[in-house]
Image 1 (cartoon, rainbow, N blue to C red):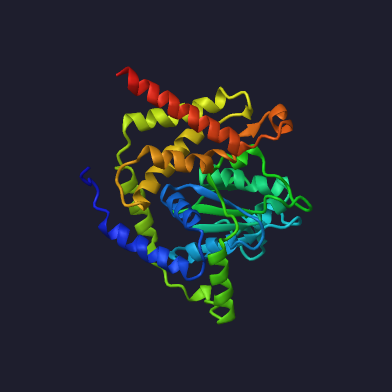
Image 2: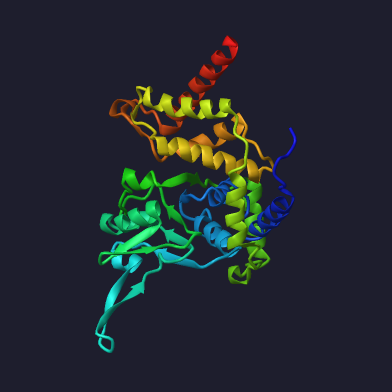
Length: 326
């Protein structure tokens, strides 16, 4: 298939950014690809993994490689909404209130351990994540054109944590799961530490500018998506609603997220068209944080991963049956 979009410069920079990330984060190639794709797809990202697998390091490294404003919010149980959004402070000289903007007023926001803050603080991000604006004291303040949140959380810890509500989880385009490194990767980590190869993350030089990212998002609009691919995505989402194991199925927002992230991932892979494999590969990351099992399914020991796998298999069978009809 002939390329309709010139991806030469994009691919060259993508190679550079992956090489630079590899200097700081060992392994995790799929997590890196998903995070880069989410940035291009203009979606917020939730990174989940046990402590010590470089969630925060990956987020900070990618943020530094983009020549954009960056802020980090460490979520804690005593964090207040005003600590995130900012607050109006009275100025005695002007006899007026001035807004002191919080750290959310940035282009890239790292919400570290987002599930450690109580519900009222988590809710402060609702409007920001969906509408790209914040309303403070009745006044609406728009965010930057380039604005996205990278949030991290520990999936196994319960003490001192607060589960994110379903409505907020749905605002993340994907959930990236970072697992343990392989034996070879862990050996490389130890060798780096033994040689004291601790790279200074503040010394990273940006590779992408804000205009680069915005330009990539415009290019993504021209990525070709065949009608059969759209049908495949539709069947995947519809099958979550027909699965007796799933209590809370996927919404139309999930279908749009799967389409957008698939287009961005195709660009990351050097293609200007989406394949069924792109959709199948990314569907678990798009759906896993949006679906909920029924109580009966949980009692039987089933998992979300099992339900998604079954959903994908059924969607593929439906696709093959439709092809056989023509």
